[in-house]
Amino acid sequence: MKLLLAIVQNDDQKSLTYALIERNISVTRIASTGGFLRGGNSTLMIGVESDRLPETLEIIREHSSRRQVVTVPATGIPHNIDSVTMPISVTVGGATVFILDVQETYKF
Ligand code: 2BA
Image (tube, rainbow, N blue to C red):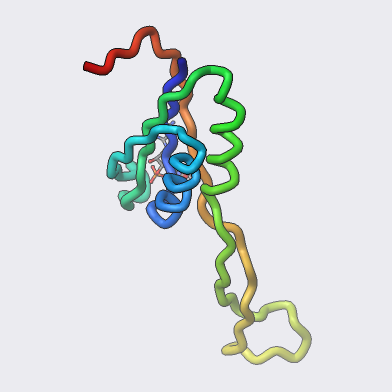
Protein backbone atom coordinates (compact mmCIF):
# COMPACT_ATOMS: atom_id res chain seq x y z
CA MET A 1 0.00 0.00 0.00
CA LYS A 2 1.11 3.57 -0.69
CA LEU A 3 0.36 6.82 1.09
CA LEU A 4 0.23 9.89 -1.13
CA LEU A 5 0.55 13.37 0.32
CA ALA A 6 -0.73 15.70 -2.38
CA ILE A 7 -0.40 19.44 -1.78
CA VAL A 8 -2.80 21.39 -3.99
CA GLN A 9 -4.28 24.86 -4.14
CA ASN A 10 -7.49 25.36 -2.16
CA ASP A 11 -9.37 26.19 -5.39
CA ASP A 12 -8.61 22.71 -6.76
CA GLN A 13 -9.15 20.56 -3.68
CA LYS A 14 -12.92 20.21 -4.03
CA SER A 15 -12.96 18.90 -7.59
CA LEU A 16 -9.98 16.64 -6.86
CA THR A 17 -11.61 15.23 -3.72
CA TYR A 18 -14.86 14.56 -5.60
CA ALA A 19 -12.99 12.85 -8.44
CA LEU A 20 -11.15 10.55 -6.00
CA ILE A 21 -14.29 9.68 -4.02
CA GLU A 22 -16.15 8.96 -7.28
CA ARG A 23 -13.48 6.35 -8.09
CA ASN A 24 -13.75 4.83 -4.61
CA ILE A 25 -10.40 6.21 -3.44
CA SER A 26 -10.43 7.36 0.19
CA VAL A 27 -9.01 10.75 0.99
CA THR A 28 -8.46 12.94 4.06
CA ARG A 29 -8.04 16.66 3.63
CA ILE A 30 -5.77 18.65 5.91
CA ALA A 31 -5.77 22.44 5.77
CA SER A 32 -2.13 23.50 5.34
CA THR A 33 -0.03 26.58 4.74
CA GLY A 34 2.80 26.97 2.24
CA GLY A 35 6.03 28.01 3.95
CA PHE A 36 7.19 30.27 1.12
CA LEU A 37 4.06 32.18 0.09
CA ARG A 38 2.39 31.72 3.50
CA GLY A 39 -0.86 31.08 1.64
CA GLY A 40 -3.45 28.49 2.51
CA ASN A 41 -3.29 25.26 0.56
CA SER A 42 -4.68 21.76 1.06
CA THR A 43 -2.82 18.55 1.76
CA LEU A 44 -4.70 15.43 0.74
CA MET A 45 -3.74 12.16 2.46
CA ILE A 46 -4.59 9.33 0.09
CA GLY A 47 -4.03 5.67 0.97
CA VAL A 48 -4.20 3.33 -2.05
CA GLU A 49 -3.19 -0.16 -3.01
CA SER A 50 0.00 -0.07 -5.08
CA ASP A 51 -1.75 -1.26 -8.24
CA ARG A 52 -3.99 1.84 -8.15
CA LEU A 53 -1.07 4.27 -7.89
CA PRO A 54 -0.89 5.18 -11.62
CA GLU A 55 -4.67 5.75 -11.76
CA THR A 56 -4.54 7.91 -8.63
CA LEU A 57 -1.67 10.03 -9.95
CA GLU A 58 -3.56 10.55 -13.20
CA ILE A 59 -6.64 11.77 -11.30
CA ILE A 60 -4.45 14.20 -9.32
CA ARG A 61 -2.79 15.42 -12.53
CA GLU A 62 -6.17 15.98 -14.22
CA HIS A 63 -7.82 17.78 -11.32
CA SER A 64 -5.04 19.88 -9.80
CA SER A 65 -5.00 22.72 -12.29
CA ARG A 66 -7.45 24.90 -14.14
CA ARG A 67 -7.53 27.57 -16.84
CA GLN A 68 -7.92 31.15 -15.66
CA VAL A 69 -8.22 34.37 -17.62
CA VAL A 70 -5.88 37.15 -16.48
CA THR A 71 -5.40 40.62 -17.94
CA VAL A 72 -1.90 41.71 -18.85
CA PRO A 73 -0.50 44.94 -20.34
CA ALA A 74 -0.68 44.79 -24.13
CA THR A 75 3.05 45.48 -24.63
CA GLY A 76 4.54 44.50 -27.96
CA ILE A 77 1.42 45.38 -29.90
CA PRO A 78 2.17 48.10 -32.50
CA HIS A 79 0.74 51.58 -31.68
CA ASN A 80 -0.57 50.36 -28.31
CA ILE A 81 -1.56 52.79 -25.60
CA ASP A 82 0.03 52.30 -22.15
CA SER A 83 -3.25 51.60 -20.40
CA VAL A 84 -4.36 48.93 -22.90
CA THR A 85 -4.60 45.46 -21.46
CA MET A 86 -5.55 42.15 -23.00
CA PRO A 87 -7.01 39.01 -21.53
CA ILE A 88 -5.03 35.79 -21.79
CA SER A 89 -5.87 32.31 -20.58
CA VAL A 90 -3.24 30.65 -18.37
CA THR A 91 -3.04 27.36 -16.49
CA VAL A 92 -2.90 27.81 -12.72
CA GLY A 93 -2.54 25.35 -9.88
CA GLY A 94 -0.59 22.10 -9.89
CA ALA A 95 0.23 19.51 -7.27
CA THR A 96 3.28 18.47 -5.26
CA VAL A 97 2.96 14.77 -4.48
CA PHE A 98 5.01 12.71 -2.02
CA ILE A 99 4.64 8.92 -2.18
CA LEU A 100 5.43 6.82 0.88
CA ASP A 101 5.43 3.08 1.45
CA VAL A 102 2.90 2.00 4.07
CA GLN A 103 4.07 -0.89 6.22
CA GLU A 104 0.80 -1.72 7.93
CA THR A 105 -2.72 -0.32 8.16
CA TYR A 106 -5.22 -0.95 10.92
CA LYS A 107 -8.82 0.17 11.19
CA PHE A 108 -10.34 -0.50 14.61
P1 2BA B 1 5.34 24.65 -5.64
O1 2BA B 1 6.74 24.14 -5.76
O2 2BA B 1 4.34 24.15 -6.62
O3 2BA B 1 4.85 24.27 -4.17
C1 2BA B 1 3.51 24.48 -3.76
C2 2BA B 1 3.37 24.17 -2.28
O4 2BA B 1 3.68 22.76 -2.10
C3 2BA B 1 4.36 24.90 -1.39
O5 2BA B 1 3.82 26.17 -1.02
C4 2BA B 1 4.46 23.97 -0.17
O6 2BA B 1 3.33 24.11 0.66
C5 2BA B 1 4.38 22.60 -0.85
N1 2BA B 1 5.71 22.03 -1.15
C6 2BA B 1 6.39 22.09 -2.31
N2 2BA B 1 7.55 21.46 -2.24
C7 2BA B 1 7.63 20.96 -0.99
C8 2BA B 1 8.62 20.21 -0.29
N3 2BA B 1 9.77 19.79 -0.86
N4 2BA B 1 8.37 19.86 1.01
C9 2BA B 1 7.21 20.25 1.60
N5 2BA B 1 6.24 20.97 1.00
C10 2BA B 1 6.44 21.32 -0.27
P2 2BA B 1 4.83 27.39 -0.79
O7 2BA B 1 5.95 26.98 0.12
O8 2BA B 1 3.99 28.56 -0.36
O9 2BA B 1 5.47 27.68 -2.24
C11 2BA B 1 4.69 28.20 -3.28
C12 2BA B 1 5.51 28.31 -4.55
O10 2BA B 1 6.56 29.23 -4.34
C13 2BA B 1 6.20 27.00 -4.95
O11 2BA B 1 5.31 26.23 -5.72
C14 2BA B 1 7.41 27.49 -5.72
O12 2BA B 1 7.04 27.82 -7.05
C15 2BA B 1 7.75 28.78 -5.01
N6 2BA B 1 8.80 28.58 -4.02
C16 2BA B 1 8.76 27.85 -2.89
N7 2BA B 1 9.91 27.92 -2.20
C17 2BA B 1 10.71 28.73 -2.93
C18 2BA B 1 12.07 29.23 -2.73
N8 2BA B 1 12.79 28.89 -1.66
N9 2BA B 1 12.56 30.05 -3.69
C19 2BA B 1 11.83 30.40 -4.77
N10 2BA B 1 10.56 29.99 -5.00
C20 2BA B 1 10.02 29.16 -4.09
